Amino acid sequence: MIALADIRPCLEGAVPSIIATCDLEGMPNVSYVSQVHYLDSQHVALTFQFFNKTHRNIGENPQATVYVTHPDTAAQYRLALLFRHSEAEGALFNAIKAKLAGIASHSGMSGVFHLKGVDVYRVLDIECVSPGDPALAPASRPLLPALRALGDDIGRCGDLSCLFDATVKGISGHFGIGQVSLLLADESGSVLYMVASTGFEVSGIGAEVLFGVGVVGVCAREQTPIRIAFGASEYSYRNAIIHYSQTATAPSWLETTIAFPELAEPASQLAVPLVLGDRLLGVLYVESGEQRRFAYEDEDALSVLASLFAARYQLLTAPGSPETTGPETSGPELAEPVLLPSGSPMLIQFYAASHTVFIDHDYLIKGVAGAILWRILQQYQQQGRQTFSNRELRLDASLGLPEIGDNLESRLVLLQKRLAERAPDIAIEKSGRGRFRLNLKRPLSLIQEAQAR
Image 1 (spheres, rainbow, N blue to C red):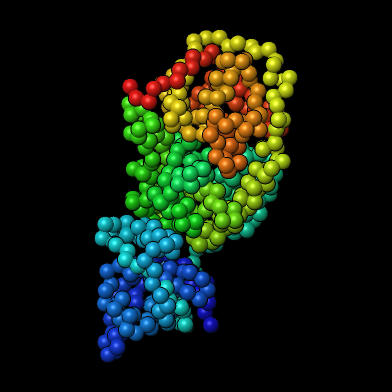
Image 2 (spheres, one colour):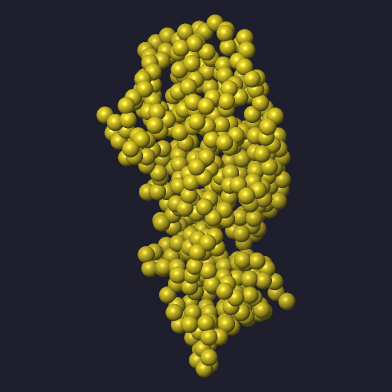
């Protein structure tokens, strides 16, 4: 008997499938369906869009026959299906809705497809009706060696900065995927922020995406992988980046948006959730200019990698780890003489309501990272301090840090990278267990601004 897993390439949406149903009187109806979605070894899902007759027939007679075609070998298979139930919301519905957008764009049907529901079927039998040409099947990419090598790289990481960089660079190097992004969920549970990327013209460090927006946002909201095999303009981030510049808590006359890095025309997209227990840590996102670049094997491999990442992340941010542990007090080190920088002062503008920081009128960062930077710059200016501990920041109630402890460490990494990219005259670097040092090349001019001009 043919296993459903054996014909998964037929269920990728590259070639439309055919569904045949009958009403109670035996009148047949045949329609095209954009994709048969693989759910597990015994179930598939069909999209319910505008095939009203098919849906009515299934309501009267729950049996259906579906023909699927292998996109490379042209082999054809006949599936005997039994309808189980329909879903019009939830993780399955939203995941398939995102995938459908790619197929619609590829077939010139964008704006026409409107997903009304997803019908789940049990697969009763699979029959090969045409073997096609097996020699045309593409050579498979061995992913297990790449997964093992990258798992070893992650296991050697001793801090979050190493973990973030090793993950995106390892996916690019070991898996041969040119464009990779890593985003973490913020304390609100509604926004993701970029902490690492590779393969793009801009890094996008600090770029933000709302839950539910685009491939990454849907993946985060539903905590399920989203894979699109063809270009889908609806899921481009060029017009989906969050703008806070028009809110009441930010100056409307200044731009506070960081561009999300992406290809000019991504043809394949894959987003995988990073989950620790029932908590979403973030999203791992890859894209390619090649259609059908990411198969289900890539989705499976990156899902395993996501679990390895989450486990290492938990270890590095657990109480007592080098990232979270530091001396309770500052100690003598903080009283060391400060070598004052020379040159023209850097203008640092701070907007307290949104914790937004501008350096020489150029937007840098906001939120938790902005609050941290303003706090340490103030202490440097007032007390001459250059070294700080993670612990003292966590205990500082004025920062309003969230209860999730690892958010501090992640935001320190974000701040470090953002400064290196946008403000080279300011740097923070690790100086020991749970400690970091502020280094300046120019003097400071700190101004706390009103919320609007």
